[in-house]
Image 1: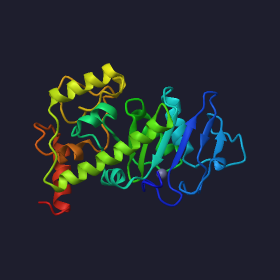
Image 2: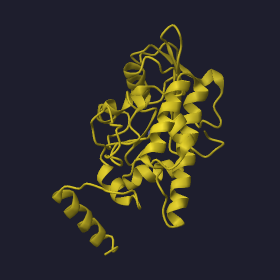
Image 3: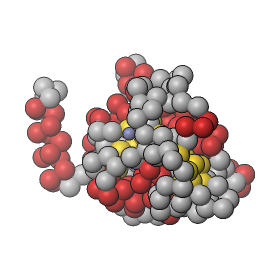
Image 4: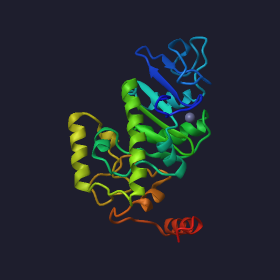
Length: 257
Ligand SMILES: [Zn+2]
């Protein structure tokens, strides 16, 4: 993560859940580029220290994910610049623009802001963890998780790469979303191949109401209004009167109108 500039200084943290339920986590206040294996903390599943190293203060976020997702064995949290730019702009990475991303990652929602290392943050994340394999945290960064450390890291890398492509495509005049039938085919392929389960069926959320696919969470992330409005040429969008008024006033304030 350090070599790829997903973290700087002592940012970010990584953990692995062992088969016996113990958790190995990167230590607090340590640069991930300079740490060694023996600087890792070991805790129980509640975060109680089992060796003399102090785990990252953001371990709570990892423990929440392990609690909500028995299938998850590793978590990577970082502040990758492009993904974090989405989180800072109040946007989810959920536009269906890349077939490979739909196959392997699914959409990345934005959890509302919560103070790092407190329950405020974990409670904002909780409703989203079951249905996604990576999350953005507003004004903070990104977290990805998987069945082993490399899957967690790969998902973080895909998140960052997707965010970068989305930003670049906007510079070129805007991205074009995949059509609903193409998304549905990709979702069928990924479920048949076992890349992602039915719990991740949320790619269409907020964008493609006309598709037969519906978001199983039934929840809206804070970014939906802005994200839908940012979609170019995606077909129909539905806004409430309040959402429209909010968008117009944001546009006026930002000088776009
Ligand atoms: Zn962080």
